Image (cartoon, rainbow, N blue to C red):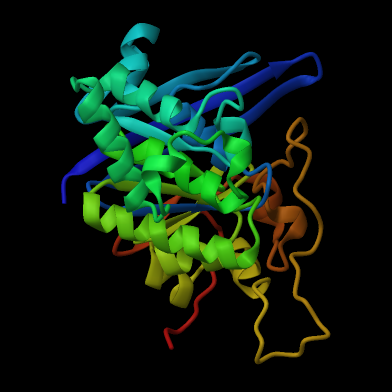
Length: 325
């Protein structure tokens, strides 16, 4: 597969009166055509800011300090805002966390879908309407002809998220960035939405960057996984390799935190401590205050992301060694 997106040395900082937050700090990764990349970690790890940086939706006081975002052979950081407006929605689409903040309550679903097609596709009114109907069918919404006339409040949360996904697919993008797309939904609807997204990726050949705090979700969905902590990628690799042969203590903590019905239900494993203050990160390894394997070097020297296997990278002075099942 060809590389669709290549991010090199990305740094996105927020400069505030309290100090500077290095929300994304020297992050590099790539996504291939038709691939699902899972980006996982706790809140505050830099996952969403990474996604927003790719599509250049960083508001003040945030700023992309340096790096390259190569999409389809072009550095997006060198494009003007008007040029980026042609990329957003057409080449790269976004599925946001809360569908009610993505949809305008005063316009019908049909009007909002039509706006995307009018902006990016050379179709007449009749063709655009047929395309909208087709998209709603694709995402599993019944009676699409009549539903085009409805407003967002007339849909359930799960149906609204289906509409958002339909809008994201409207202009046949090459990449969709989904930022916690199931957070506001109940467990049953979450499963339906995730299965739908995977099905659409396979059918349309679009690449997906799936941002989530839930490692169980990406283990079922993603081809590869990036584990992020305090603005950095701490482990990266193929999904099976990460799940079966994880080497970073943080990845181990995330996996052990997933509830297991076969284990003691009275005990829920957690990662000790909390995410450090982003205004005052610890010296050396950011994870050192929470790490059971912490040694003197961890408190002084920041580990580098190093390849320890085929396409398996870890940022740890003392990576774990776990035999595959």
